[in-house]
Length: 180
Image (cartoon, rainbow, N blue to C red; front, side):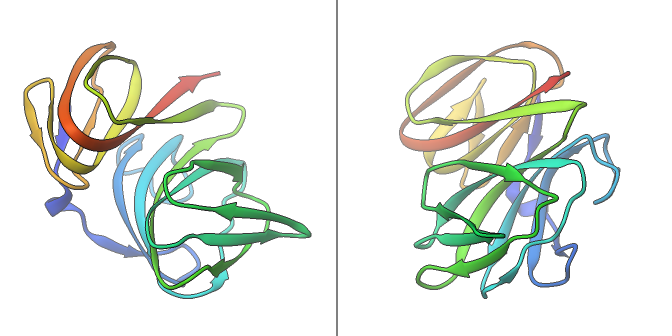
């Protein structure tokens, strides 16, 4: 298991320059915005505007704080509300409108046809079977396999196995990646 503390993340401009993101983890490491197989990041969205286009990428966004976002995707509308992961194609143009002020979101992306992903919320102590994946601790106090977790800290699996997830009144998200 690799510990990824929130305090070590560096803010980077979005691909389209319209905001900032903080990469939690990506594979392969150092792949950059156009060459990753999968990526987990946390973004601050402060204004309405277009989403970056990511060819051949599937995305899942989860609102962590704020009221939410409405995405207009060429006539289809997606409503992203706190705590509800929503998946959509990253190569489809999308215009975002904030529902009531800024939001912070968890962004999970994977390369279509090569990697699949699922995002699951965790809010109870459990033994979690892990493969290729990343767990992001959102709130509350707890531990993952004995490692103390603070807000937005994360752990990445470095081998398949099980993690003891412990805590009370916490919220975390686990992004699991599957090779296709």
